[in-house]
Image (cartoon, rainbow, N blue to C red):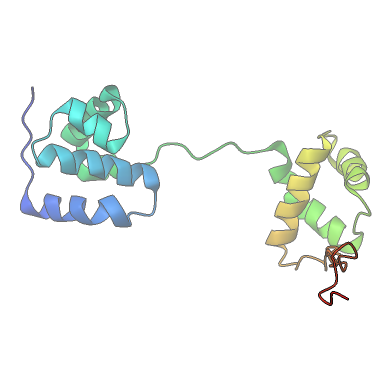
Length: 160
């Protein structure tokens, strides 16, 4: 088993970032380091931190190779959609010509960009475009409420 030594400054950073770092994956990595600094075994660390033993080893390898800056990296950025390059033009078009339905928007998107997307993807794109344009959501319909009906089967309180 490898031994790790943690400087007091590193321990302070680990102690703080295991609860306060903005990314939950980095918090989890810091939790693994904290438990390692407290002398727990890899199996115990895996159980307490909710990760696999292999993840514990991987996080410790990262710390050994690059210190805390290496552990703070989040290597994935997410997928970029094909419509992103057309977002500004579509946003301008939809601000001038609001679609009446997702199906109308789907047709416009295909006509303007040549990209066909399903209705669910079109709705998500419209939501993204409207939020980036600063638009407020429209008023929603009031939800129907239940009205209490008097219980006509109830016996009257006046016996007589």
